[in-house]
Amino acid sequence: MAEWTNWAGTVRATPRAEVMVRDVPHAQELCRTTAASGGALKVVGSGHSFTAIAEATDVLVRVDRLSGVRAVDRETARVWVGAGTPLHVLGQLLAREGLALTNMGDIDRQTVAGAVSTGTHGTGAAYTGLAGQLTGVELVTADGEVRRYDHDDPEWGGVALSLGALGIVTALQIQCVPSFLLQAHEQPDVLDCVLASLDETVDAADHFEFYWFPHTDRVQTKTNTRVADVARRDPLPAWRARLDDDLLSNTVFEGVNRLLTRVPRLTPAANQVAARALSARTYTDTSYDVFVTRRTVRFRESEYSVPRAAVPDLLRQLRTWCDRHDARIPFPVEVRFTAADDLWLSTAYGRETGYVAVHQYHRRDHRAYFEAFWSMLRDHDARPHWGKMHDLDVAELRSRYERFDDFVALRDALDPSRVFGNPYLERVLG
Image (cartoon, rainbow, N blue to C red):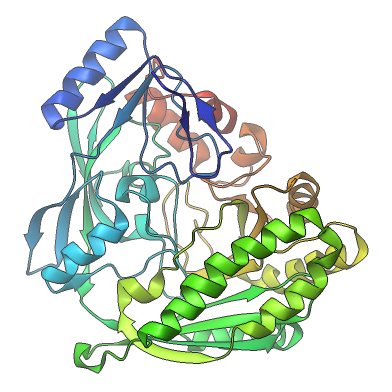
């Protein structure tokens, strides 16, 4: 078949075959026949992971047809959805039921199963990532058995965030909440001021994040406040949305990055201009529209979680490195926060968490920047986002996850022949 590549262009594969799963019985038969022949399966969602977690070495599996809302329990607000449902579609489907996800990441192009399985998260000190919102998982294992898990199962902590290593996820039950709006307030600020009051700011906000522009002292903050009254919707004027989000943040930003690739020395000045081009704005809109950001400029990304208290020191280290080295970084550094959870391979397992994400334009060499970032993390008990670039292997990761060996044992029980394995999973799980 034709070559497959992920969104960022960091992974390429030429699997032997591609299969579009029609329904759950088809997934069962596919698992049985592949296991019997000694083959391997890898489910691919939107390809938005920067790592090779979805690299298919034998049979590439798509679950696009397992999409949409299966069932709604109105008393509990729990909703079963097909694993292949894209997040940008899911938000609208839930809205028709008067429901919403309680929190989302800032990109909504992923399938729900892909986002959950890689530990995708948003921001908000009182809220977990997407996997922490699950109440049920339907999984087809290597022997073709359909298994349903919920919070009462002893394996729940492993199944809810599984890296695609346990089977084909066919459906997920999500604990939703009534539809709500978010009032977004975005404004420029200064890095040292933000870091000085970071704990107070994060604790006071429903959802807080900020973006630091390297080679400057400038940041852009975003504070989202939950609004229960859906009649208070007050979105950005269409012209302002097109100007800020389409023209400046995408079209112009693409052009600027192309220029800076040719003339890197202009980067500090360009970052100063970019940091000041985004002025303060406040608007109120549906939660799924405010949580996410439209991005068309391609990039490479590495994101690690650290204990929340470590974020200021890490940002200061990163700023010092940028000031002292020749690397020119046109992309802002993204900083977010989540609550602790109890999922075995969650980056927020057992601790309040801060996330720091570094990016580089896809036409630029990211290696020196990312490797410097990774070296700073050695002393911070850091855990990498499973779908974003990192340099850790099984030995390092085992020391950072208390339940790591429990997950490996569960994998051994459900997939002893590694039907769902690939080189990336061998590297991180053994």
